[in-house]
Amino acid sequence: MFWKKNKTPKPKAVEITDQNFEEMVSNTDQPILLDFWAAWCGPCKAVGPIIDELSGEFEGRAIVGKINVDQNPNLSSYFQVKSIPTLMFIKNRQLIDRYAGLVPKPNLVEMLENLIELEVPDPPAPEDVAKDEEE
Image 1 (cartoon, rainbow, N blue to C red):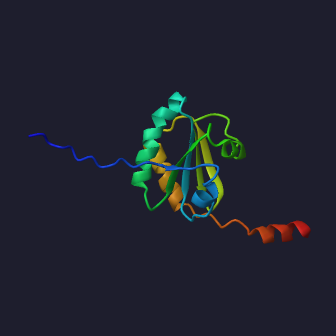
Image 2: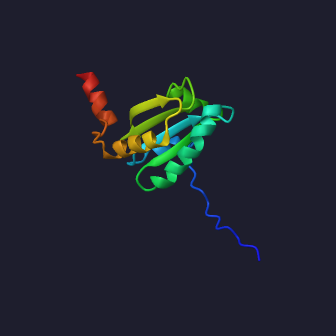
Image 3: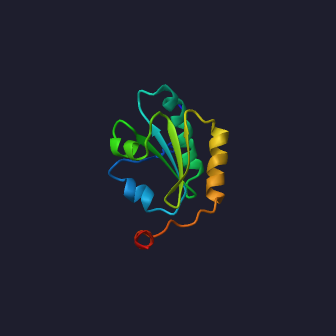
């Protein structure tokens, strides 16, 4: 008799694209970790499985997403990604921190936990910014 291994699907980070960025990232109240990567990047291949694991471990508490820089040039340009992997931590639609290169999993866990705990005031509404500029 052959025993079937319990094949529970491994968690995967959310695929963020130029097209779904607003829906997936800009319109959420959850903290966000974004991994800018490319298929040809050796260090990206090392951090990719860690990012996928974190997406499962932080499900419901944070969004963990991946952005392929080759397929999403607008986001790469907007965030001025110069090297990969680049990891960005966002809360309340504000960039809190960014790191280029490999970061060990325990450090990423700590950074995400700190991001979740971090109190970040809401950004000013666009109409408030326009009013301040007029004065």
